[in-house]
Image (cartoon, rainbow, N blue to C red; front, side):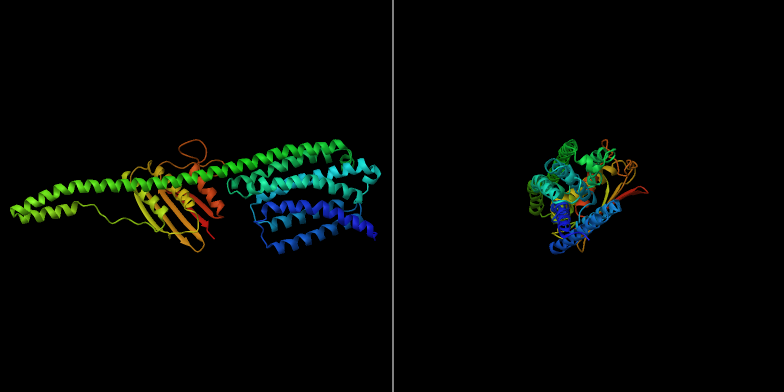
Length: 441
């Protein structure tokens, strides 16, 4: 049975070693927690008790099951984190590995400081108050600037939806830096404790983390820039819609002016027939004039203004290029998502479909379907194609206009991921089909 002061030392060390960096790991995802704040707090408390219990078992059974206890502790920590945080796996893993590297820096620096200040003999003992004191100092020096960085830069960058698929690979960056310091520390004739007592180890780990943070910050900056580019693209689509409205208005004004100009001639002819009493010819002329009038029944594809304008524009483009354009769209005035999102989504799909139809021999066709479902938006665009679509190594379709992947489909993919939706792309029997389901709730 351990004396009370030893139990207190173990408890204090475990809390200092575990809790500050756990709270830092949760902070960027504070708005993406799977459970309420109260439930998450209870889970953190329970996890702390478990970690303290494992530390007590390690202290009462020194050297027997240390590796097993460490593995169990790490596994429980990881299970808790991925359960508590409701975010993309790559983002959570990136954050967890990054903070693991920083926590190791604090732990090793504390052990080095303990050896220098309190002597090697004291530092070789586990869980002593001297180590907890040094760990409190190093954790403060590391965690405070890190929390400020998280608040000002990292939390905002990690919440961005841009580059969502990139996070599936970005976690390899902190994993690589983890190996950079792990290998020389543990793959060595000296024990890890002896290596930690050497100041050179603390400096080596410090420089590794500084270099790593330059890379982390670059990643965050790139994500922010990508988000800005996506926002600019959405604004450009909005401007294109406004331009289409302006063009349609100008065409209507021009048509009205032409009709007023022609009307004078029609009135003159009808007046001459009326004056000469040639009522039969007047009747025939009126019937012919009536048939020549354009159809003034405006086509309303759907109630959603932006979608209706886009459909009108591409319907006109399809008519000019002799493309069969069929529409079955039922969208209300409000769909629960910004107009810019629908404009980018529908605009890119229709633009791609129009371009693909230009290579078709025979009668090209485009079919557009869209409808609102409970808390979801469904859009499907199908088109015939003449040139077979080509996929890259990752299974994504390559652009037919330039090297690399198609920008339009990538934009559609990013929006789908942003709204936690589903994207299905299929090319079969001469038809290219893109189906999108967005979670609007």
